[in-house]
Image (cartoon, rainbow, N blue to C red; front, side):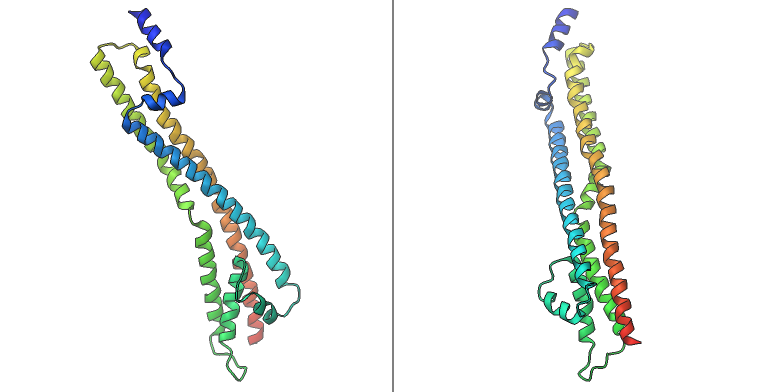
Amino acid sequence: METETLALANEADFTLIALFFRASLIVQLVMIALIIASVWVWAIAFSKFAMFRRSRANAAVFDAAFWSGEPLDEYYDKVADAPRSASERVFVAGMTEWRRSLRDDGALIPGVQQRVDRSMDVAIARESARMTNGLTFLATTGATAPFVGLFGTVWGIMRSFQEIAISGQTSLAVVAPGIAEALLATGLGLLAAIPAVILYNKLSNDADGIIGTYESFADEFSTLLSRQLD
């Protein structure tokens, strides 16, 4: 009997594909969900890395143009219709409110400073929402994927114990394939969760840094405009 059991265990296919197809439907669904989540995590990450790289490059170009000495009114007229970057959109938001506050006689409507600041804050908030869109999925995956994988493992092990009860054999070699299938779910959960947590922390810090440059520019621009009021 032991010889037959060992022969049966040796014949079992322990490749990942074989483990997946031998698993129960519930465990297969868990694995598929975790694989999709893992792929989506990396898709979001690559998209954000490309977005942040463009944002940094555009911010550098904008800073060079803004501090080049060109009159702000002329620069605004060039970019107001179609701002190409987040920095330009923040600038256009503030400058648009500034121009709207100019009366026909050249005087400014009271409270212009607060309105300009609020306009730029709203523009920055929009850019922040756009940059952080999708990061919640990374955080959610990092927090829940291990437990989803653990659910698949528990379900698979429960099925293995049921097979033990039905077959009447308690040899580990008989239930090893079923346990391996169950543990694969936990492995996939960790495969999705660990990169998700690392990427979330990295991308969140990068987004905060870029948004911080927009806020710094808004403060500098607000300071420049405030000098016109003194």
